[in-house]
Length: 179
Image 1 (tube, helix red, strand yellow):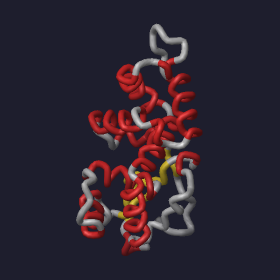
Image 2 (cartoon, helix red, strand yellow):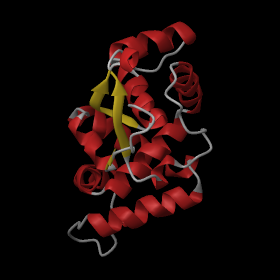
Image 3 (cartoon, helix red, strand yellow):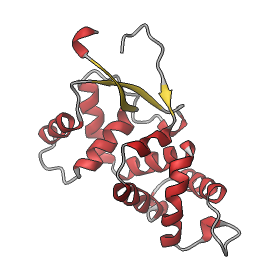
């Protein structure tokens, strides 16, 4: 994207167009079952947004439902609420800190100009829509595995972390050579 153009954003829940259902379940399950491992404020935000977005019969406060029930209902909240999707993705990224750091180095080296890792991306307006045409997920996965040959992270995790750390979804592909 040319530097003189204004950045465009799309809501965080737009990521649903890029995620398989089974992988979304994996991410949501990992976060909801690891709330004690993330910071207290994020856990409170997750529970508040879940309670606001999910109505579970038999529970006045949906966040008190059993984990399996919460996971089933969390899909709908993740799909409809940009704020819930953002806090789930941010919490997930913190649970994969070594991958987060390696992906940051990768995208920074590819001139994506990522925000520092300390920035809470869930507070941003959404994902940027510009994406370098040559940086396909396959290319980025291979590049990360070159940086960290011992990684045990799945290709899905590497792709999701690239989207999150780079704060971009591949909507508007641009050619780096024409910049």
